[in-house]
Amino acid sequence: MTYQEHIQAELKENRAFSAIVEGLKSRRWQKILIFADDDPDGGTAAAILIRTLKAMRIDYDIDMPESFELEAFRVKEWTSRNRYDAIFCIDKGTCGYYDDFVADGRDFVVIDHHLYQGDPQKCIVYNPRKPCCTAYLCHRIQAALDRRQDFDDFVALVGLRADWAIRPHTTDVAEYILPFYQEASKKFPRILKKVNSRPTWMEIDQREWTLPLNQIAEWAFAVTGGGFQYWYGDRDASLRDRHPPTIFLNSLLKLGQEATSLGDIETLEDFQRSLSNERILRRMYEWYLKDWESGSTLLDTAFRAATLGPVSVYFFTGGDIPLLPMIGSVKLGDLVKKNNHEAAAIIMAVQLKNGWTHFSMRGTSEKIHVGKMCSNLAQRLVAKHGFKDEITGGGHPQAAECKVRRPEISFLSNLGELVDYLKKLEALDAQAVAGKIAPGDRTFAVELGLSYLSAP
Ligand SMILES: [Mn+2]
Image 1 (spheres, protein in one colour):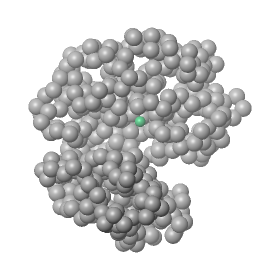
Image 2: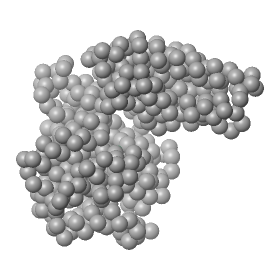
Image 3: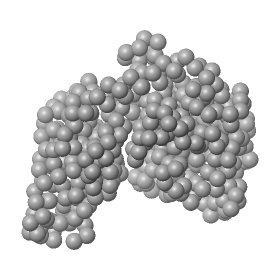
Image 4: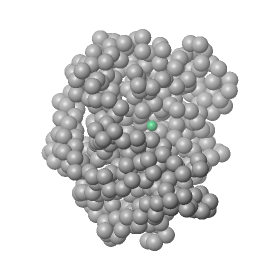
């Protein structure tokens, strides 16, 4: 099946997808407000969407706010100043309360690939519940409208890789992405060839080779701040008062206009050289590399603090460290290899400069569920202190965060809660090892994150 056939089939099946294509084609939406996530996927998605709107001469405004979920005050601010026919909310989750943002004569369009956090009924929701990324969904809209150019394929590849939706030479490409990937990879074979140079943070299974695509995706991560607002203005005056995700988006849009042949790009260096605001982007990338080096040295002090069933659990604690979760993933991969662990996890507990507490967890398997651990931990902290908007936690089985955004709740008190939680897990594990765990406790243990106890 060709990509175009794949898209035609989806147009027939997916009402939201066809509604978006129709809304744009019919010029029913003449002025659109875009809220895009500020990570590499959000930025590449915005670039593809904006290129489509520009080609169709549809007017737009764009905002890339820091928070992942779109907040009501931002919608209010923009819509009190201007009139919009539609708001596009891209790569910012699929939340039930987005229904509140629908107004008379104004549609609210969600383009997203994350787990549904609610089921908005009044919005147009294009979230196919398939492994993909938002840049790719925007590319499908663009292709359905016949506005796709080779440049957009390149941008979609970067978005897919940066969001872990494709991992060339490591895992098979998902069915939903395959028809696109087969065409795009033929256009850009040079960025998909294994090279022996500095492995990126995406090389977690091996550190022997990388791909120019991975390096460009990592670069995108570095210059946007990766959705974590890892910006460098606090240390570099030339980067002060700038908004890196916007710089990234604009550099992509400019590159697309110049229409240089990206098929010739063979290295990250080639790519960087083709960008118009090369100097500032290089500076940001250099800071990223420096931060990576110093953070990586600090993470060497992580130690094995517990064993939960088959999982060796490492622990790290420290102050504000840029890039921490990503460095943790790579470190964990190293530790697993070095010590031949069947499965491992790392728990990173840090106090940020502003007094907030950040717990970040990564795992190498689904034997424990760090997403459940972070979400339960946040619930316990909320039960104790309140502040349900400021104390949040959750994630996937293998990657999760818990944040306490209240400086008056001390790091030690949060750490105490984390330790209590881990002690509980240790005790449940010990009961299971001794063969003395009650069925109810076993269920409870799985809920707390000990997934390996789910099959008795
Ligand atoms: Mn995404």
